[in-house]
Length: 197
Image (cartoon, rainbow, N blue to C red; front, side, top):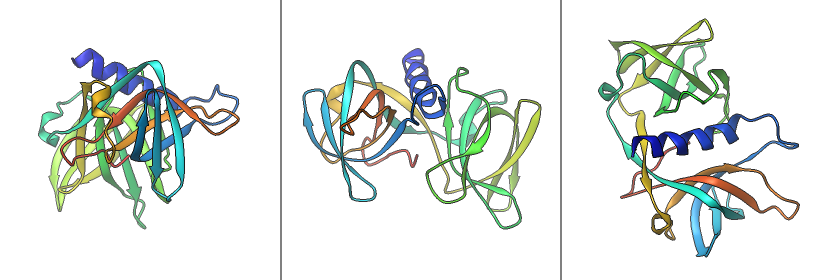
């Protein structure tokens, strides 16, 4: 089960950070409006409709909430954060990710000023409003406040029956000339919980 989850995150993050495509991959975030075989109709956050095609070997995973305390020193994680006026980073979400995901600190498109930091967890200390974690990647150290309301999660293997109308999905893949996005991995909400990616 663990290897399946790692493989799914690896696929998603590889697409999300790849630079080898002729065009940038499309990050799909929205609610399933219809399911027709391998084709999903997704209502995006901006109200637009998008067709998403599942590759034959597409992996499905459901989002599962975990506690920050579940993350031990040395765990490789991805942290979506926002930068405050004073330059400090405050986490919106923390995700377990596979070692194949590229390490580093980059802009992220989940919101204005958002960043993504993929790095090893090296320290954690109580701080006002939550915990301050220390991450290290490529010789750089990052300190990020993880407030008590931040989402901490992982992915649990599932099958296509999890892709139900009304569930929220996150996926990444290339779009063809007609705008259809083909994906090899999808994370889907379950029991009302979803990743805020």
